[in-house]
Amino acid sequence: MSTTRTLIRNGLVITASDETHADILIEDGRIAALAAHGTDIAASWTASAERVIDATGKYVIPGGVDAHTHLDFPFGGTFSSDDFESGTRAAAWGGTTTIVDFAVQTAGHALREGLDAWHAKADGKCAIDYAFHMIVSDVNDASLKEMDLLIEEGVSSFKLFMAYPGVLYSDDGKILRAMQRASTNGGLIMMHAENGIAIDVLVEQALARGETDPRYHGEVRKVLLEAEATHRAIQLARVAGAPLYVVHVSAEEAVAELAAARDKGLPVFGETCPQYLFLSTDNLAEPGFEGAKYVCSTPLRPREHQAALWRGLRTNDLQVVSTDHCPFCFNGQKELGRGDFSKIPNGLPGIENRMDLLHQGVVDGHLTRRRWIEIACATPARMFGLYPKKGTIAPGADADIVIYDPHTEQVISAETHHMSVDYSAYEGKRVTGRVETVLSRGEPVLEDRRFVGRAGHGLYTPRSTCQYLD
Ligand code: URP
Ligand code: ZN
Ligand code: ZN
Image (cartoon, rainbow, N blue to C red; front, side):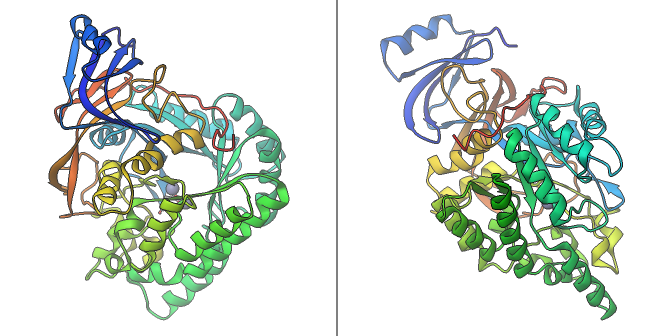
């Protein structure tokens, strides 16, 4: 914990609810106080501060909360190429100071074993704070009971898959049972909503026709099969009386299902990811095997869907933007699916790019600045029981703070990024805005774009249950 008194002066402090020209005093790793520029109280802090950060002309924003990452994640016979050290370092470069990663239950094993394994992967490695969700791949009496215990130790959300039959898939009966448990123990069910059984039929038929290129990944994982699964998940959650959070929403029709449920007053929430806001099936169709770089599930959609996603973010039919960061190198990993798109490991890199891409959403007029902070910091923290410790700038909160330069232009590239992956999904994209300085619990992690953090600074952060229902 930092014992240094740090003062951040002259910046525009942006939270989900306010924009204020205020100075911030940090003590013992927490925000001690805010005061308007030029007031006596703010002036009185200058003398006693050991570290003064001048944020003139900059935004001062809460550190990003990325509620969907897969570091060191086993998939398709390989592991995602960022581990907890490289992944959290890259997150910090991109202005994210907390991640919620997915621990995995291996079928036939206890949730506990999976969680212990993920603690071992992360312990001592992280540059920023971290927490865990649990992927439940084997819903049975024992794992249902274990959900209660995990919630008590700060793992309060559980991902289920309607996709990937034979791997992570749960049938409707299992999903209903897990939701019923969540309705009584306060857990939040996170759903990968795609009809995996139907998709597998279409995969087999496509391959039999010789349709093996990456673009067919997008064609078989149909919009209707995302919308149908989203609808079914909502109905199952209604039957169970449980809240529902649908992950990586990519299709306009799936947003419509969420909106219809929310119009009925149901506690149904949705997350989308930057790749669905900025990339499309055009990328999947890039020549040669280049499209493999963009294989993820749910898949990228035709660009017409992007407007509906931005609109959903504005109307609060979608509440959160996370990355679903699950990188695989093009060479050696994505290549596993040459000649058979179904063998391309699913996932895209992006942990470093989320805050910048969403700021570009502000520049392009899709979002207000406060909504940027709401969907990237405050709501993920509230949704997953980390608020107000994380996700805001207020007295008592952890001093996880980003000094953001809203004017500097940058070009996203694998040449300059810090993720351990040999390509960028956004190669050559020009964005306005750049992270300058990052504090985690008051400690500098990035200082004027120089990494000064360390593996092991980041702490496991137990979570309460969902605070977005309050
Ligand atoms: O393609 C993806 N999304 N890979 C990670 C696993 C998942 O379904 O979130
Ligand atoms: Zn998923
Ligand atoms: Zn994921």
